[in-house]
Length: 299
Image (cartoon, rainbow, N blue to C red; front, side, top):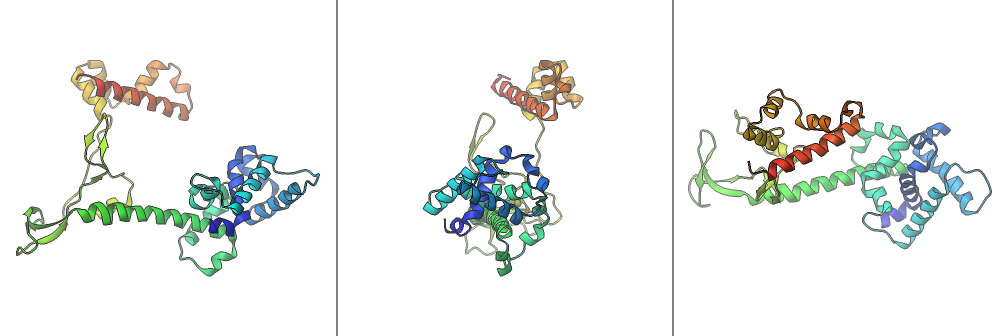
């Protein structure tokens, strides 16, 4: 709350603009069409008109009334401390939306990633909107790595420590041991999954760590060995298809044809005429249908 209050006008501006993108002329080119290329200049442009609007000055305004009304509402809420999770005020400084709003109207914001990654310096405070962008991105990184630290490093991994006796040649664990036993060492034995998962597809005490998680790089194979895992594409549908003995279906799998797109084409003769977005949507729908049928069958 104190942070938002410190940048009351700037946060009100960002929150209002983010909510009103579609109401602006030329949308994301709203400012560039007027020759405005810097966030600070866009803010000053807005503030000049907003002050006149609040004073009920009769003039031509670049912004629709909705933007001014939202900014006023946010300004009042910040002043009264009335905002919480999910509120656009908080989103403007603690969510990627705050950064996106600036970069959408002023693409040059995307050219400063090296500066965002540097240690905070007093000079960062000289430019309010640069500081807000840098703060938002680093706050989100802090949240991400704090979660990794508590969930994995100090959580699942630490809890998996065991005293063991291992094979000195390949470091494979032979058995658990008492802490005082000669030759015993402490070894981390984490599973590659976390969080309970129970669904129609799987039922187990753990679930796979997402593939793009940085924590996967903390797990490595013994020197000279390869650590790998596999995800079989369309495993459920292919299993049901081969078990059914349907030669037509099996031939599709053997040819490497996407069974979900094939199904969509049977339902929609004009499938090839659809946009890429709609093709993706229909493929996803038939993927859901096919897996549901396969998993609920008696095969």
